[in-house]
Length: 197
Figure 1: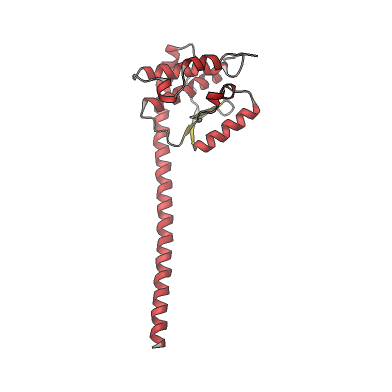
Figure 2: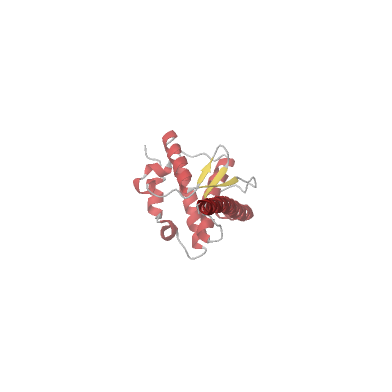
């Protein structure tokens, strides 16, 4: 009887060990699969962003006083937490547009442009298929063209005015507005982009 008990216990423990190992392997495979899906989604979104860049540059240069520079920015993706962290770091190193107005400073960071690396950072969930998503890329492309074109501004927040105006005009093409999509009204943009010392 004791031998039977030991045999049953040994079989049960082997079954549990095999089952646990299978569960771990399944979890690893599932994690790797989710990661590869994420990489695939980012790859698809990055390809879509790249495909849109030339059209956006052409549209911006024909509708605004911006150079039609074909030098593309790097497009990367980051979590919303990482975007917020980078924005906070940027605020501590320079006086920025988002910091100059309490209401806009409280807004969630939607995307960023890094002047030094010429990189647009889009949120992880950016799909690029909606006019709203595309308008975010338009906004950041304004900053890229301002940067690469060597445009100068009286103060850092002044460069935001054109970016928001372009974003709003892009949205208007689809019957949308900056205020409805992002809760940013043009009066606030005009006031906060003014250089007041």
